[in-house]
Amino acid sequence: MIYKLNLFQFARPFFLFGFCAILIISGCKKTLPEDALEPNDNFQLATELIAGKALSGRAKQENIDVFSFKCEAMREIVFSLQSIGLEDCAEFTVTGPGGDILYQDEGSFCDSPRELAMCAEGVKLEEIKDFGYKIYVPAKKSGKYFLSISERGRPDNIYPFSWDYKIKAEFK
Image (cartoon, rainbow, N blue to C red; front, top):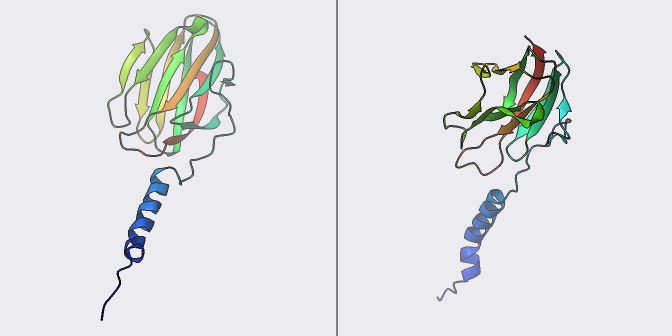
């Protein structure tokens, strides 16, 4: 008895497996939707914070969230960010009136240590275990202060990371 080997029938399971793997890697998985605060990706579209009122947001790896807060000189602003879900690999920038960068941290990836690119005198980031972060900013000038939040990733992440948080600005 002679068997005919049909190459397509033999290779079909391998092709199907490869095809499924390509779909998964190429983004078949849905990314999480934006939060209700969008668009707030720059200073002109920044979401204004009201003292003591918390807002919920979602930082995404490919999308910066920007918040503004009006403050008179000689006060101290406290930005509180409570982690409420997903990955927490946040990166922050605080910009004062006139565009002065008062605080900026950076780190290539989530697991790398937080590196300070800029930290003006008196500005402090406090990481609070099982809560999130507090950023203390002495307001030396009157005007709008901006907090930009972005999400870092991992060297091997295929899909963008997201972080759900509650943000509140207050005076100390």
